[in-house]
Length: 485
Ligand code: GLN
Image (cartoon, helix red, strand yellow):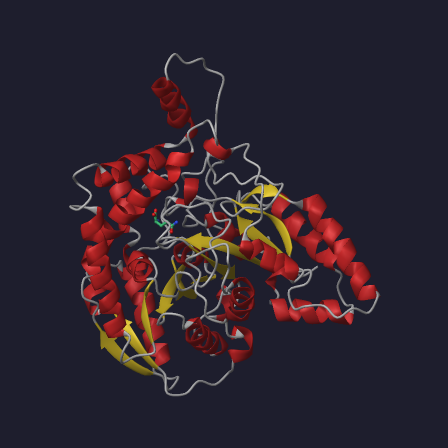
């Protein structure tokens, strides 16, 4: 049987409606692929519940009920997004036994349309990382070459989509965690405008940066997922009150008067030749599409890594203070003489090395008398970076730049060198700091490994990004299928 997860959501929907496939078959195929896979993509499978939902959908179809485009579609959810009654581990020993008492808004919205959540995917502990190696449940592998990382922190979601273990997935992106694993696994990953999608039920890492978004095998699926999960939510005060366009209806095979701003001059010394070569080939291809191209420079790009790591670790140190081993988290069975001793053991053992490093860094940045030198200053520079992007996007519709400065690297290669791991985030964190939407699209391969590029749009203009990316996909310039490129 052909792998049904390779089909797009609209195609699967047609087959279900015509009675050519049953939702049960979709689930059988997904679970069989997961069970035979050695990628280590899932932490928890929701098999029993999924089949119950399939029975229910089957009855509804039999009774002649009209179904939504997402009905019966298997979706994987990153394990830092809550589903009531199921574990949400954040890939941490700290939350190994934590069962969510409520469901995230994004999951509720997907389920309201009949989507089936098949399981929870692996990630870097508390979404801190760029390789999925810091997971308490062992690293996920890159589907193209198993000795390479799938990127992170949403590596489980991206590898599951690329490995056809699910039709689509949700990830979270604080500084690149949807886009970079999408790039490393050769799939599409969309980080929406900050606030476009509710964070209610997403375990907080850095609250002023965290976003939830789709990871898919094609642009149409991302459009369908985004229009389902986006929109105002009274449970998240940072969610944007604006209405959500019907992104899927906006996708056409024609686009007119589009200008793409290419960010390359200032990056050429920083990104690897393998990535630069793919980008140049892609630009050559663009020249035949009628799209206008323009070179642009983003001021302040080089300062983004320190600014991001000050803000992200400061906010993380505050957010993770709640895991004190009393109200939440790993407890163990050691006896303690003092409260401090208890914190030391419970937080010391419950958290992994990278999380502790970040809590210490963030606590250092926020300590009494120093906040204005680090966090407040970083917030000021962040505003300048945002303004640079706004300026660059005045004369062009979208920007184009690499997603990652390198190809996927080997498992273990950077794990003991945190600074070189942080530098991996160069091309994604600037966009996160600016709060802008961006999609990583798979555009080529080098040495048998995928390369992605980012299309960055203006605030709330996810529709423009999706339209352009769909056009590029239809013209053979982007595809999750190696043979189509
Ligand atoms: N790699 C970045 C970090 O380690 C981004 C993580 C994320 O977006 N969750 O912070």
